[in-house]
Amino acid sequence: MTEPVVLEPAEVWAYLVGRELLPADASGVVREVGDGNMNRVFVAIPDDSAIAGLAVKQAPPWIQKLGPSAPMSPERALIEARALRRFAEYAPRQTPRVLDVDPPRFAFTMEDLSDLTVLRTALNDGAGLGRTSAEVGELVGRVTFATSVAGATPQARAALLADSVNPLLAEVTLQYLLGDPFTTAEHNHHHPALNTALQKLRSDPAVRTELATLRADFGGNAQALVHGDLHSGSVMVGVRKGEPVVRVIDPEFAMVGPIGLDLGLYLANVVIAAVRAYAQGDAERGNDHVLSIADCWDSFCAAWREGWPGRVDPLLDDGWLLRHLRGVWHDTLGYAAVELVRRVAGYSHASDLETLPDPGPASAVVLGLGHKLLVDREICGSRPDPRALAHLVSTSWEAQQ
Image (cartoon, rainbow, N blue to C red; front, side):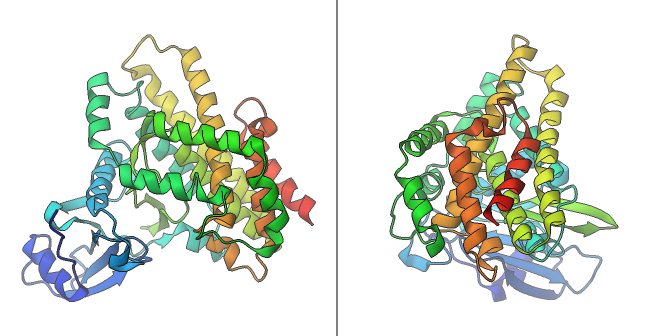
């Protein structure tokens, strides 16, 4: 494969004009934005406010943060663009518009989101969740119903499976979410206050069995199209024309897989944000965060029930739907559990906790919740009960004090 020419900020404006995405006589500025971990992201802002700004995202053939010493297939950019367009078919309100895809450069252009804020940043700065969890739940519900055995024909699902193969980034998930945090891997790190609890978790046979079950589920449960990395850093929030706006971004890990993966990752990061609020002495905001777990789950279920009358297979009855949603909730708790562990004991930690004056107590609560949920998902009840999960989080913090 020929390596793509990596764009530099000084080249982006001319690139957009050449792609006929900006008028030839327009002027403006280009800024490089984003966290720089995986990709390069540029925002072009025209001087003429009548011309909409644009964002260009390019995947270099390596992990951007580490450089050429860490090669990574740039195909991830094309997978992301395809996923965004697919998401926009079913959940246009929560999905940024992709305007152009440039396969030779492994780049795509989409609407400018620079007026919005990354959800994790907003929460760290003291914001509430508002309707964000409900919007995320609706997106997951609409996309997964439409691409599941209930919403898509066998032929359509076969084409989707072929179009959504993502082996390299699936391997990353297996290693960094469903592997390394449960071992003494080289790049792991954790707060010293977790030493004893972490040793207990890593030596617990029940943890090993549940982890193995999730790894097998991740690799073999092709339920629907999922985002694959849906945490609070993959959601943008803000206000436009006086109305709240939510956009889900960065689906470069998209694949056909278990629905509970997306819900679990998002809910775990809501829990982490809540624990941060508790640690800062803001119990009211922490409680509001965990109560939004119910908003997410209820909106997800509502999207499935909305689509249910039009299901493609009439032999899928209401009993199957009930059993299916219970199974998704069970999976959701499992993936939430491993995400909680990863964010305090793996390679990629959560800034929600790391920016606290002393991350130790909050990290201990997060690790304890991850351990409990992984080995005993019925701790929240035998049926889907997101309010029981919210209660578990708040009481776990109280018990730590």
